[in-house]
Image (cartoon, rainbow, N blue to C red; front, side):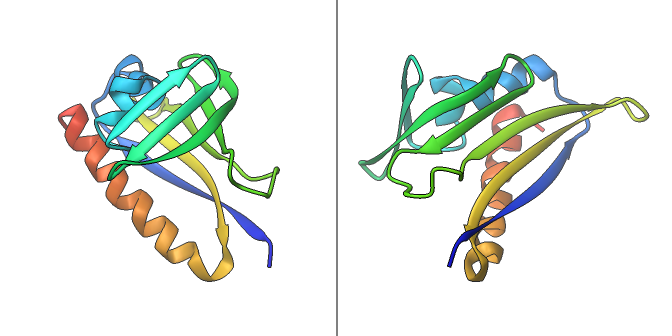
Length: 127
């Protein structure tokens, strides 16, 4: 069974794009909400949870807008997870679009995990 791509969008009413970008693309920012510890060396990232590390590579980056990671242990070379920042001109809010892949029967769990992680992100941003 192959993985299925999905998108989730979260709206942030009062956040600077620069601050949000730092939380999505820097070791200090990512370790405040996404993993216990994050190390980035050029395009290789090590995310650590409970002393267990997972490596990913940055496969695409558009500063202040989007960053895409691919887990190195993922056999599906087409899968990735991506953070993309959008401005909502009508309201002045900012949205974070997350793209990820999961097995069809694990999609609800993956979305629930992102929901809880983004709650941590919002706390880290002070919103």
